[in-house]
Amino acid sequence: MGMVNAPNRVPQHQRFYQQAYKEHTRLWKIGPRSNYYMIPYNILLYGTFGATLYMMGRKVMGHNTWFGKD
Image (tube, rainbow, N blue to C red; front, side, top):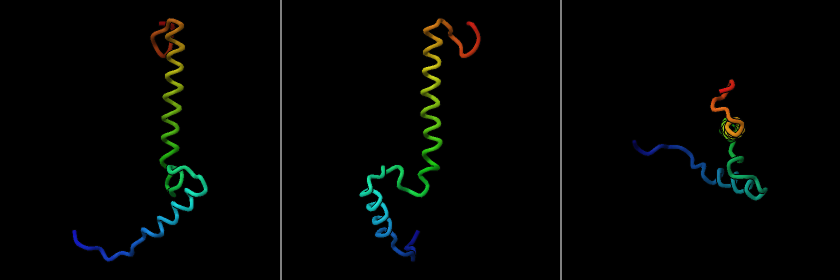
């Protein structure tokens, strides 16, 4: 792979991130595609947390499966 004749966009990206950081925006919420990453992450995070609490409650009540009595 050789040299690519492309403009250097690093200064523009630095200004963009530094401006958002000065406004106290979290780093994972700054980028233009951050919602595409955060929505599935939050669904998995809170979904597994809810499933864990559900099964802990069932285990305390004496049920060893997700559904049913046993």
